[in-house]
Image 1 (tube, rainbow, N blue to C red):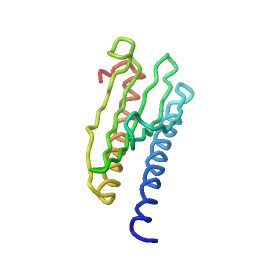
Image 2: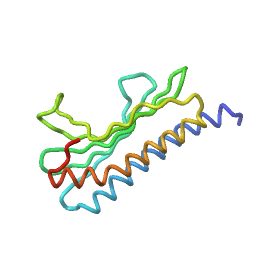
Image 3: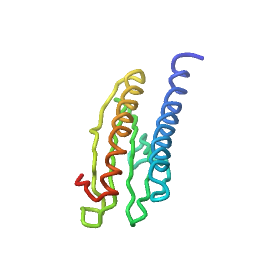
Length: 142
């Protein structure tokens, strides 16, 4: 197997690993707050070719969901990753309010890209428990 073949394997493994980290985050929050919340996960292709959204939802059981998402992208020029945490909010534009937005970051190699994914996941994992507690107590302003 040559370098290109190994790199072709590393990217889907990195995406699977990112989805697994999000899944573990959601499940730990579910365990902490059960039976008052539910959770789910999804992965879908984004609107831009070469992009995929990995996300988990936390059902607050009051008609709102908190969404933690990571968007990974590839183009001929660069890899990209961005992530956010938001919540359904009928008073916000488009019915959704961002609580945390981590700006899009770019990498020109897979060796640079995988650590970018990990850093954004670290930021999501650090912020999500606090934001969930604030949402449940009614203090989150986003």
